Amino acid sequence: MEKGSVRGSIISLISAAVGGGVLSLPFVFALSGWAVGLFLLVLGAFAGVWSNQLIVEVAIAKKLVNFD
Figure 1: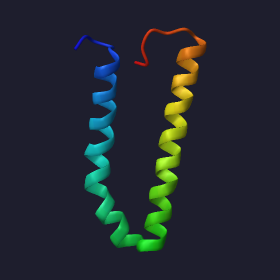
Figure 2: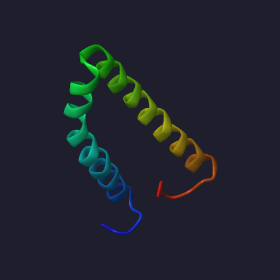
Figure 3: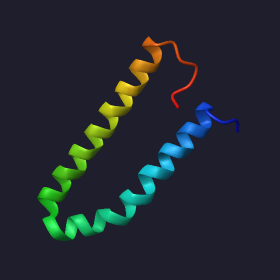
Figure 4: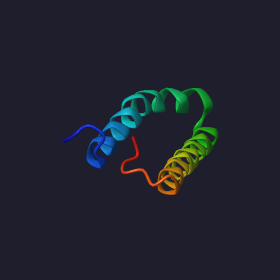
């Protein structure tokens, strides 16, 4: 994998999201309860998809070769 490649970017994003998210998820559910925890999980998923979509749109508009 070359620096700044699409595959490298995907792996970096996945490792960053999975690392902290998986470890903190049970703690958040224990503190807030199932209903609020589920709402926060859906809200976080929406925010993640939306922010990634913004990054892609800007990279396409600026004609960048990668999303780094």
